[in-house]
Amino acid sequence: MSKAAVYKGNKTIEVVEKENQPLKAEEVRLDVAYCGICGTDRHAYHGVMDGRIGTEAVIGHEMSGVITECGTAVTDYKVGDVVVVRPLDWCGECPTCKRGFTHICENLNFIGLDSEGAFQSSWNVHQRILHRVPEGVSLKDAALVEPLAVACHDVRRSGAASGDFALIIGGGPIGILIAQVLKSKGVDFVLSEVNETRLSIAESMGIKTLNPLKDDIPASLKEMNNGSLADVVFEVSASQPGALSMSAFARPRGKIVLVGIFGSNPEVCLKDFFWKELELLGARVYAGEDFDEALQILNSDDFPAETVISKVYPLEEMEKAFRDLDEDLSVMKILVQCGDLK
Image (cartoon, rainbow, N blue to C red; front, side):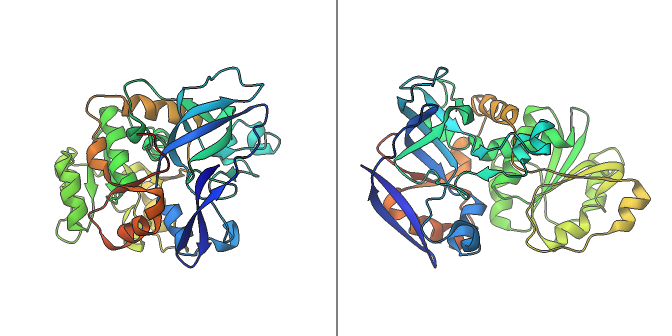
């Protein structure tokens, strides 16, 4: 028997006892240690995704854990291995998969939404989506690998390299993690955010910041970037002001990476795209190489995991954790401890 947090609809989560599922040949059984709450989980909690996930769903995908049992066909992992899960199950048959882009498979099963997720103490997953965690990374910190992999993918899509100057619009968890990835690549950058609490958190990490309600962003960029606007702009805020201003902050022939998920079609300035010959790049989830890079960054000495992780709640208090995220803007990332592992 194990425990699972089941979303019941209408901001209600019930922790229940459940039977462990039989293990398939290529699966491992995990004791889940920690699982982070992301923006998508919050949408689910608020009922926005009931049509997709239903009201008897175990969600969650930003996890860390330890293998407790291996199926008969598992060869690359063993009991006791510390791992994270890349929560994408692709078909391998659609045109997109055949072109090598399995992370945006046309029939993608995003695990934790389209199928059972990690907010439970015991979980069966296929071996092909596992990544081994380096010895120097704690189980708690390893729960940051998935959102950090998102940031790695965003930066990889941009092509940003040392010598470039980047602007990050939005200082939430993904914006902060993009800053860490840029730092690891030697890319200079500044973060734009309107919320004073988030600005303070970013500044405590040594991140240069601007507030568009107070600062002249184009003038500040030119001062920081030898008279030029940003080489790369990451739009992470998913806000109308961010969508409208992103092209104004990019230099001619600059790149804009769309990271934030918009619920509706925002107004954008197409004239800027024409006039400055800008490139707009979408960035969705991650590939295996992004997880590998995230694990390397997380294993570095200067990654600020303690600042990114604001609080840890037990599985039984998941509803309280979601309310905390809704009500307290000083909270950056909340982890849920799903079992006894620490």
